[in-house]
Amino acid sequence: MEPILALRESGVLTLTFNRVEKKNAITQEMYALLHRELQSAQADEAVRVVVLQGQQDLFTSGNDVTEFLQRPPGGLDTPVFDFLRSLADFPKPVIAAVGGPAVGIGTTLLLHCDLVYAGDNALFSLPFVNLGLSPEAASSLLLPLRVGPAAAAEMLMFGEPFGADDALAVGLINRVLPPEGLRDYAQAQARKLAAKPSASLALTKQLLRKGQRELVHAAMADEAWHFARMLQGPAAKEAFSAFLAKRKPDFSKL
Ligand code: COA
Image (cartoon, rainbow, N blue to C red; front, side, top):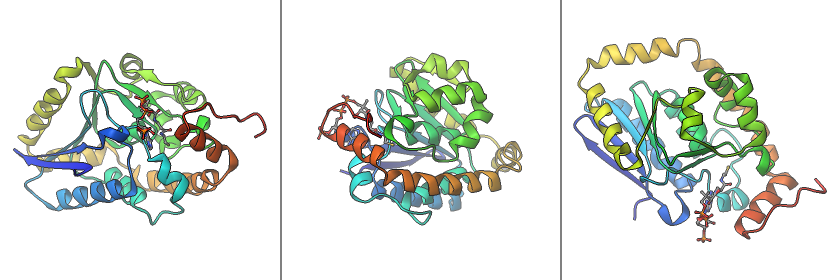
């Protein structure tokens, strides 16, 4: 089974995480697939909008933890950063439809989407500190801009999951929907956008993000350096081993 499903219909490319047995944990192979799809969609005039989604009750559990332990990404020349850069720079509208857990990069990638719709079952979390890590995907820059510094500090320092209503209240997402209607709503919104003049939409997106591109790239690079170092550290190793062994991590000596 393909871990990323790509469907092109009525001007909309829908990319679906499809690794349900591992809670849609994202592997380097999946990042590479997403990157390729975005690159080809950027060049394809028939694609006017992208929708990123999981299932009704599952967005993604974030980076694949087993890969983090076995093959930690070391630099910027990796599939995860190819994906993040292609998403951050994508010139056409991107809509995310989030139901269930959206862990780690599952939440930070939303900062690069234009519109985020969530089921009332959505559960966002930024558990980097609890995993002995540090923020990624330019979230240290974009999250405070999006939700304000106070909410950003709370989300990033405690790393506790928060629901769709809280996410809506701080402006992280656009709308909360019943889970069973989420993906249809996202599709309907995508088709509405796909029917609009594409040059106007592209220009609107470009102007909304004016001056941000260089800052976002610099933040990603800076964060990536720290993240790679932290990933090799004892706290991260303890956190990920504990997760895979289904036990609580012990940071008492770290
Ligand atoms: N990487 C690798 N495997 C993962 C994973 C991840 N990010 N998230 C879940 N899985 C695997 C589990 O190890 C388990 O595998 P198994 O069936 O072989 O034991 C399977 O997916 C089901 O996960 P489980 O934790 O039992 O499901 P749950 O419904 O109890 O909880 C989540 C779902 C999403 C809340 C939980 O899996 C979770 O918190 N994952 C996040 C992991 C993480 O720290 N991600 C951030 C990385 S920066």
